[in-house]
Image (tube, rainbow, N blue to C red; front, top):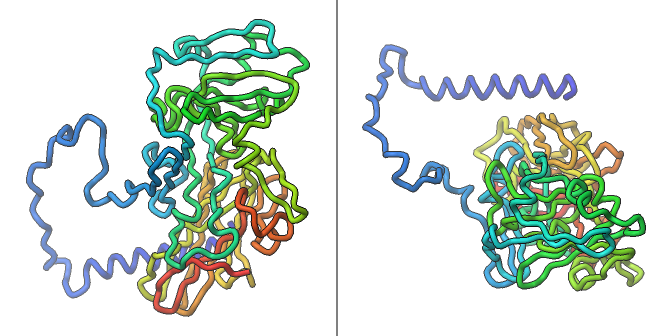
Length: 411
């Protein structure tokens, strides 16, 4: 953080602490303050079951937006989370044929095609391989699709606009270790990953990615995957669009060309102004969003507030996040909270002294490849106004003079 930002942050903290002390002691001397007696005996920890639950006073983050039916999605309440790790129960999910709950003892992974020795692996077989744990973000390529053509309602929250991204610690086996057991032929250039759900979700993955950092994942945030996250096994290809991280993984086939599956042709493609479509977009480009203050929140009068949000890039690390409070006319560098990891959410923070007048809040990320997050006008030129996938444009929140925050586009 630059020296000016360090000074502002120090003043922000001093003001906040001083204000808190004043509120506690207002109208009373130290001798007059009487502490309440100890509370009565608390509840037994197992009253609500053996799996821990949050306080009854901290339940807002447990509300996960959802859509019912065989094809649906649920979104992470980004404004209600802290740090960079998304609780497993709040991680977004998208399903195309309902959510199966598969007995792990019955589940098998077939690896075949252009291999020397096709094999079937049980979950016990897979879990015998040396495991690794990696922290990565995951994002649906349709994240922000409703914001593409026109602004959503001013009351649309950051959960609705950006909630199809989350970040977790994933545990599993590097895929290349398992592939050593079957021997991939040198002329194999692509892999088909297929899920064991009713839609048979299938995606073509290039071999260079398979042999780079692809994982066979069976655990998330220290516990086994939940059914909606692909229990008992999913493919994880860090930085690639969410649907390529095939859930309920049961088959890997190797060949010399892509499979052109239904999902990668009909749904997960990007239209261009010339009428053509880009099919294999792969990466989720650098993106950021302010989570607080954000739409439907209300600021309680002028004064110091912390602007905070998340930034990420499917191609590497977050190198810089800039924040504007005047709709992009001027920018300030935000503080990047450690750890800053590759293909992982990064938390950014900036102290802000709101003067009580209308303001437009925006964030803009630059990743370590030099890529800079675009605004909507740039994205419309590059892609198409009818597009809906891979929307990584700058998001704008308006803070009105009465403190109410709403969702707007400011281009």
